[in-house]
Image 1 (spheres, one colour):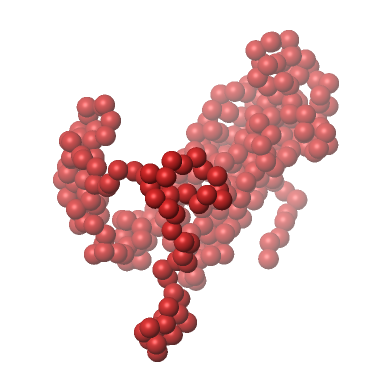
Image 2: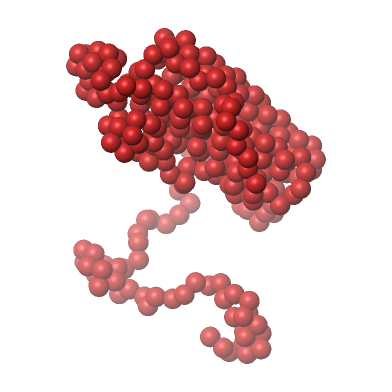
Length: 303
């Protein structure tokens, strides 16, 4: 159950309308690293967490906080659009051919579709996409994605802070910057705690090390014209997981055969000279499933 209060998490009071900046601010709502992304990312991570206790409770606390950040930004965009499009800021923007060409004043969909309010889209009007979120069920992998999301979000917030002189907008962004600072530190601390609790190691998932080709698990392949990639600790010494020794391969050679796809099905009309022979018949995957394995055990000749 979620419960909404009428009070915003932090005050939203721009000094004056600014539809051009309102369009820029849309990035923090519906961009790839906007507040909608972290809201849904944390909600689905929390719902997908299979352990009761501190980790699930933490995720749900932050997820619910982020809903409030979406509300703050949505309210700020609506207030920046007050009176748009007939505002002095839009007229001034249109007088500058460069600004007019890039921004075109306000996003017309904010007027046509949203009725002078925000939309669930980025600063170019591209709708938010659920594929932005990461919620794998592996908390180590998810928390690392969370650190990256908060870092990218703080970078964008910092850039937007420099793009306005409005004290009311800056005040809200100062709050957002502070929360992004805490959230980065918080997820990093949660990663350390996962490891201290013995739930995860350094590499996610903490499994199949005896199955992977270990000789390829610690080597930097030199595959560019740069000359200094071997200068970092990633190319020498013990890896962060404590089980691998980093090495540098100065002249790596390909391990596979010459690249070539299979002969194409003639019904697909790929241009083909016959050099690879005739196409094979389509076959189902090699995994037989539980019932297939039972039948195979009872009748080894069954195919």
